[in-house]
Amino acid sequence: MKVLAVLALVAAAAPFLRAAGQGGEGDGAGPLPFAVGVAPAGCDIGQGEWVRDEAARPWYQEWECPYIQPQLTCQAHGRPDKGYQNWRWQPRGCSLPSFNATMMLEMLRGKRMLFVGDSLNRGQYVSLLCLLHRAIPDGAKSFETVDSLSIFRAKDYDATIEFYWAPMLAESNSDDAVVHRVDDRVIRGAPMDKHSRFWQGAHILVFNSYLWWTAEDKIKILRGADNDLSKDIVEMKAAEAYRLVLYQVVRWLERNADPKNSRAFFVTASPTHTDSTAWGDEAEGGNCYNQTTPIGDASYWGSTSREMLRVTEEVLATSRVPVGVVNITQLSEYRRDGHTQTYKKQWSEPTPEQRADPRSYADCTHWCLPGVPDTWNELLYWKLFFPSNDQAL
Image 1: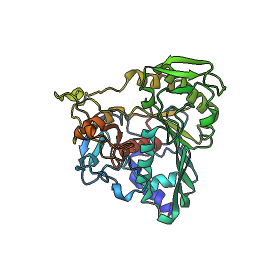
Image 2: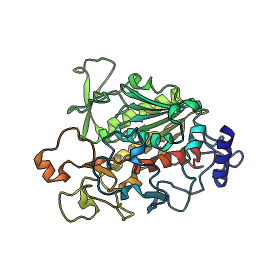
Image 3: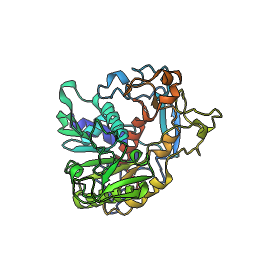
């Protein structure tokens, strides 16, 4: 089975296989770990268009993937349309190999892959489980969650794919994986030991952090290791606090990640669609609710903070170990139709007033599955196995 899987990989990836001695993204001294080929020159996978493809999308059905949380099961909660599932991302001017679950599992044999971040990263993690699980017999896989850590095991491959809840990457008072809604957010600037001890030993790390930094203009930071939150707390502009934490992550990677056998990635900001006037709707008060098609304007940019994206780019560029950037922001900006809207398990029962105006409680942040996060994983797949020659941010 292993030989057949490798042969299938070679056949499917033949046009993209790496020339001898050719380097990859972020280096220049040889192929990166897990890389089996190289993306076509000049191919920016974050730029392109959404193409309707009912024959090839979705990759799976909502009902057949047992790992999707009820907050993301839009069909089970009454969403009347399915068109949001049928869009395929086509990078401009280039094509890349299709996602191959068996190939990915083979490449993960004996490895540990870990997603670290917030609920949007967890959505991408669950999407990946949905993309992979059909290639694994029922008795050869398991899933468990203990506190902040979720672990999927592909037993025949001796591989784990995991998710660790750390919405701000640094230690914070929002670290409870279930009860994390707080009005007064506090983070610890350093050290990161509480979280980073779970990252040790991962062969593939996929980080994200953005949404939780945008709730307020300023963030409170607890300095030092003292657990007394009344001591030595300073306020800092959110973007600068974000910069501080990203530097901590980069320094941790430089001390702990071995670029000869591991890879690290950072997934950029996932957009929200809370104001329909931004895409030309003349009626006030609209948002993602009842949106059924992507935005067609290629130049569209919503409310995603360019400052925060710039901070991400600047900090990751300082890393002495390669960090691949999975740029999901622009392609997701177009997908006003992909959010869970009101078709999800609600944390609390909507009031009669809310039910009279569903826009008032529509979730325009999180994404239905199957849906947009599946495309994020296609980009991650391409970056992992077919990186570009240039360091792409």
